[in-house]
Length: 145
Ligand SMILES: [Zn+2]
Ligand SMILES: [Zn+2]
Ligand SMILES: [Zn+2]
Ligand SMILES: [Zn+2]
Image 1 (cartoon, rainbow, N blue to C red):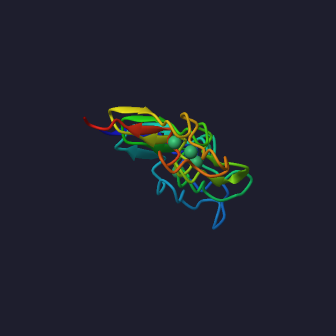
Image 2 (image 1 turned 120 degrees about the horizontal axis):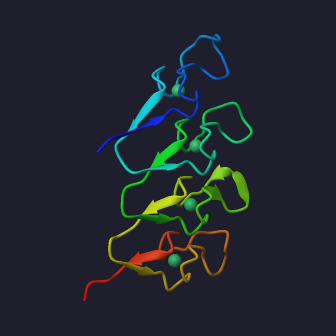
């Protein structure tokens, strides 16, 4: 299954939006094609809010590499640790260490709310750290009986 999405970095125009090398240089993200193929379910990149630009800097977003979207294997849920924002707790220029800034995480098909963090994804002793039991996802795999 392939979906094609417009390159966010150059807005589908295929040109480097900042013209760093020359105003006519090709967009480094899509290679000048203006479109990018995604082989997995794609979501708007929460870290750059779909713009493809790193927040506050004229470089490509470190999470989506400038594409403006991220792909996450199914089944996926919103990352509990960053609540889908893709940002590291208290450090908004850093991507979330649990989801890598994608805002979503792949989870087991049969899962339950993590009992240790109550689904918050944050460690009970120190909420700056992700919960060790679920790895910050807020859910754990249901143990087979
Ligand atoms: Zn592009
Ligand atoms: Zn991004
Ligand atoms: Zn996260
Ligand atoms: Zn947990």
